[in-house]
Image 1 (cartoon, rainbow, N blue to C red):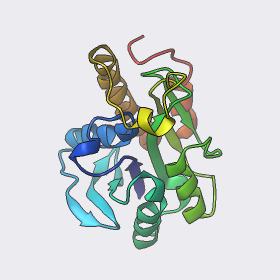
Image 2 (cartoon, helix red, strand yellow; image 1 turned 90 degrees about the vertical axis):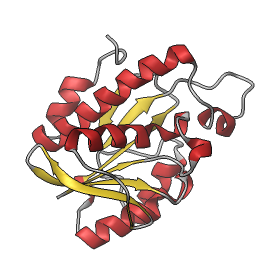
Image 3 (cartoon, rainbow, N blue to C red; image 1 turned 90 degrees about the horizontal axis):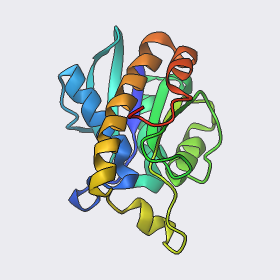
Amino acid sequence: MYIIAGLGNPGGRYEHTRHNVGFEVIDILADRMGLCVDEKKHKGLCGRGMLEGQRVILLKPQTFMNLSGESVRAAADFYKVEPENILVIYDDVSLEPGQLRIRGKGSAGGHNGIKNIIAHLGTQEFPRIKVGVGEKPGSMDLADYVLSRFSKGEQEMMDQAFREAAEAAAAVIGQGIDAAMNHFNGRKKAEE
């Protein structure tokens, strides 16, 4: 069994912001799997189904970004899922908008949601898909930037990136992390 956790903040105020790319990708996966992610469990919204022949829990933590680990840990404990079978999808300001990067493990890289997941799981050894949202403009506060929405021009590129991230998640589940990294890493942007 796998858990695919897409990170974001709950509530309409945060919909479609840079910080909520994980929720966007989960919605695409749910649509592909023909299920709803609306069951309130594990401090999040969940949906259960099959992806690439594997049982999968889709999870949108509702704890707000900085406490994402509480929800991920609760789901992992309940379903007895090991960290290497927990795939986390989230925004990355160090990647160009629309660029994807898949990693099998690693540090938080300054991302508070990932920092909290690492703290709750007690390990950095879990796969993740980073979706680039671009660097913040020089004078802008980072928190304001990640809570901002994409421009109309960026949104088209990001919609493609969300679809590609959903494909990448399916590849991680179906083919393994190494095959997914070989296929998806190194692409410049989602539209290329």
